[in-house]
Length: 279
Image (cartoon, rainbow, N blue to C red; front, side):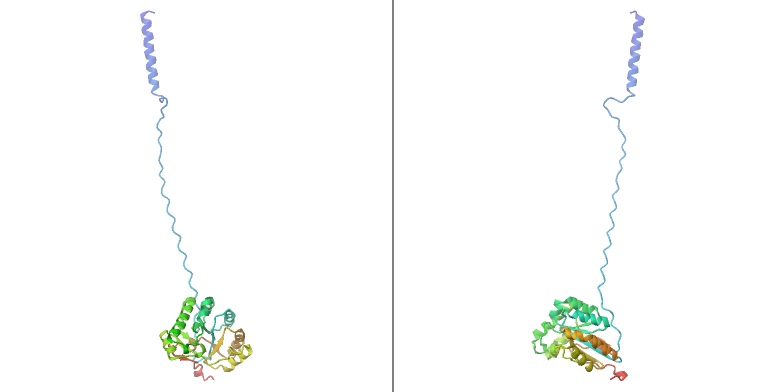
């Protein structure tokens, strides 16, 4: 090959090599990945759920308001029931509720501890609950230690059932003493006896109980009965109906005495209806 041909061929080779080198800069290198831009998204923390409001406690049931009765003018009578509560007390409460009558219950502490639901029902119905000793003890003949125990345990049983501490005491058998009077005064208990006793504990006949109560009542009377006897419970509807027909208003013991009972003092009956000249 002559000299000019060799020169042309060499120049072509150089040109081809230069072109290949330039093209190589345009294509990605084998086995190398091009960097990719990645957008990082940061999650915001989720808001904490608001705590649920605590449910408001249900209001405790309360007894209905005490009716405004002026026993200095009205013919008032207080029906009282001793020795319960017992299962039969529920029937008596139904009778009183159906007729809109409030009464006073002197409960035996051990029975109140056994049937707190009945003591609570008495209280919530607007009846008055008093102390009748814990074991139906003869408090007039008891020692000071026994008197204090009998009264205190009954106070605690009634308070546990109702949240209210009694202010009335009926000594079992009507048996009293100087020791009892002093301890009753110290505990804030007024001593309540009775003026009408139908002897329902002795003669279990509803007709006899009804007759003796109706015939014995006068304005201001405190009637003694026992809710532990079915014959007494049976007599109550007719007693209420007959006395109501005669113009009597049924009240609790505290209402009968105008709420003014002194601790330790003894109460038998009230002067009721006298300002109207009633019998």
